[in-house]
Length: 236
Length: 284
Ligand SMILES: Nc1ncnc2c1ncn2[C@@H]1O[C@H](COP(=O)(O)OP(=O)(O)OP(=O)(O)O)[C@@H](O)[C@H]1O
Ligand SMILES: [Mg+2]
Image 1 (tube, rainbow over the protein chains, first blue to last red):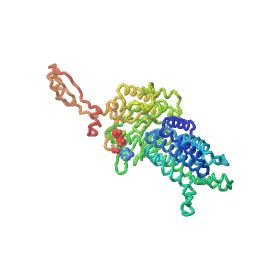
Image 2 (tube, rainbow over the protein chains, first blue to last red):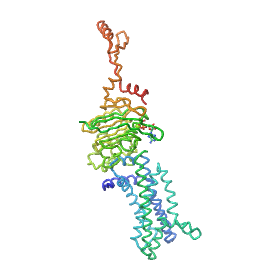
Image 3 (tube, rainbow over the protein chains, first blue to last red):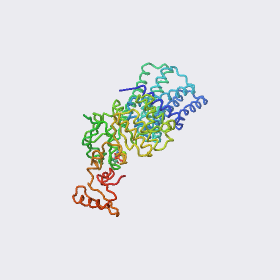
Image 4 (spheres, rainbow over the protein chains, first blue to last red):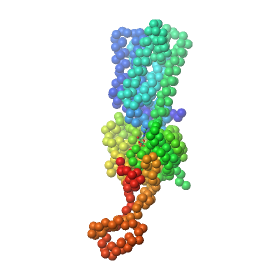
């Protein structure tokens, strides 16, 4: 695969300029702060509550913004112009994702701080969040590539929100309804399990399993996004 | 030897049950400006999309710059061509200059390429304007600037001047000729027969899925001429005479000795006439 830092940087800079002038979408980055401050003021300080906000951020900021940016490029035919240029699939997908990755990382760091959440192992948590961001970016890309307009794309991220952000809550029902246990394998649920484990010195093997599940989801989503992108290069 | 820039052999394109191109063949030599003409919906844009790997033909062979057209998908071949179509979009929130900057970086061009491209389309004064504030003709010119910025070997222009005023149109014709002089082959579609005639070395007429006529404009005019002339007399009478008719010469010399001829004109068809004859339709 041919990757060019110059092209990636050019696409990143372009996206940054567009994003900073697109208030309808950039306003979304403030949503998690409000939620975090609210939880903080209420004195809610459980891991579940922290991750309610964090998983919401991943869906409403990471996946939502990414899907809107991709859908807007499709709607205005600029994605086709990029595809007709020497920028490779990797250049375009990495370039277009790096802005949302940076934004997500900053927003999540601030949200964690505002929540008053002090993880026992910051490094492992940061790594887990980074993997999660990549996963939600890929899911956002899929939503953006599947839909034709920004409107459709923002609606398409709603199921993502419901499944991945609220999915882990179903786990509480798993004693009554064993089927709800499936939710444990959601990347968002694994993120919570991992975070809880970090507080109680979880065995390395379980940390590894949580990462493996999250990385598995991420690879699958990236592959689907790439295939979908290749299909969008033609009109057939 | 002149190498072919584009070779299309028996290309067919069907969308489901609808056949847009039935059996199209033509060759474009390197260095040519080639006009692809035809009524709306005849498949001109479809052909450009096949040649630039945005569509795959149902049957037949299309070669671009010596390679199967589908290879134009590869990023290493994309810098070799430039394209302007109605699905070439710009970033509305960015300025003209910012739009071009993105692509000059993607093509790895020096900063001067932006200035040259803006000069090419006569938009130097509008460089700081946001695309969302531009007129239709200005947007078309920015898109053209982007298509020519990297001085490609091959340029696809799908109705490049459809929204332009005569002054800008002429400015762009001059620019395209200069680009062509430096070796760029140009594949152009247009509904403007004057444009085809002033710009193109050769043209092809596409109708109902096939190329119905192809050649140099002058040669086609000769071929489609009915070899007649119109003689207008002082009296206001008009006579149409066949050029290869002996009796015409007699009549002519008679009128000449009477000094009664006001005007003589050979009836060569225009490209527009040929278009209508070939397609059996009016310009759309
Ligand atoms: N993706 C597609 N799916 C189905 N039909 C299509 C598709 N693209 C084009 N067509 C059809 O193919 C035919 C040729 O379209 P095309 O756009 O190539 O015409 P054109 O010669 O460029 O017309 P115009 O001069 O109006 O631009 C039309 O009937 C059009 O409806
Ligand atoms: Mg067309």
